[in-house]
Length: 356
Length: 193
Image 1: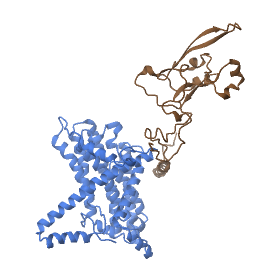
Image 2: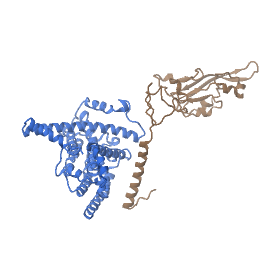
Image 3: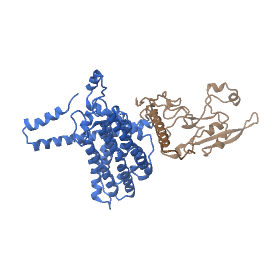
Image 4: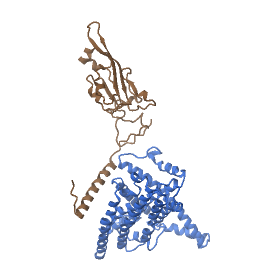
């Protein structure tokens, strides 16, 4: 298994020893390099996801999707990005200008923040705390603030309704999302993201404990709600609320919301893949050493992207299957079904861990 | 009506079942080969338009086979003549008044028999809703729909067609009348040449 920390250690040694820079300058350069890498990956994954969404959606609806721009339509998203970049940015009269301008950045910050926690490969995680899982839930909550401020700041009744709905839904579903993550902490015994992945060396989490399957499914449902997608997209219900909380945004203001929406989808899938499907950890079956060695030959980053995009596909499948839920149905689902079920499952997982 | 007072767990079970049904249907659709035509890229190559597609109304002309028919022979029709008798059954059956037939009575000088002769068969494509009632009403097999669908013009008056005056040999895509290229489902038929 290739350990990416060789590269990072070499780069650090290059700056501090070969070039003889002080720790301040070397850390600054490293931060800039990592930041550029994160943002590039963020934009590229967003482009890939938007294209995937269009194609997957089309195939679920008996269509082909974009076919005109480039072979099989692969340059369609680039055309869209260029269009969005050259659009005029205007602000609404009587809007709360400060909140209106801050809101997209809050959403992007939350999205990039959680994005940085994803472990790409062995030794290739950007943020890796001892309270990682806790931090992920904390940072992802900033996104709710962005959604709410956008609705409030744009002085538009539809935006306010949408923002209220979005805030209520996202705050509610963070409950079962957190409980799902706690269940993984119970099984692996650590909150550090790299530790959670290492703990799945012998078997992925869903194969370690039968009740984790239920936690995984609940994570997908509440993650879907958290990313404002699928049957839970009532915050941007096009048919009722024009576009929802980002109605009044144009150009890159809207672009940030669009980007964050897709990246939140990837982040949720990435966390699900990391926590429940082993992240970059190859498929290991204890006892079959030769099989494990063959699996180790596939790079970890391929495993991670494969799992994450598989979960993305699952979420798209759900999104393009079910109609949108009403706000009371959404809250009922969370507070009457998912949350109690998840508490029960947490108890079951803990009991299983204690007994087996 | 469904029983609304299900128990909590019965409700969950039923909900899971219907959700699974929905997912199964969309998953099946995902892998179904797509039959989308890449029009207009393929309009001269792989385009398939079913023969029964109703694009516009045309007059049928007498063919070699028709000449063997005793009814056609009795009417004294030649190869390539139209079969319309101006009986106005199609005009009467049309819900939109799309068809307007003008005719006059003509006396055969030899037999002294009177016979209706068609002056003008006016068909307004812009009014037509392609219900095929006129074709079903025709007793003489004189009209039919073809799959010639490229009928867009810049002036509405150009949609008013006089079917008896034209000899229809196919529209803008001459090979299309028999359905065009064979129907290929699940292939990216984007060939332009």
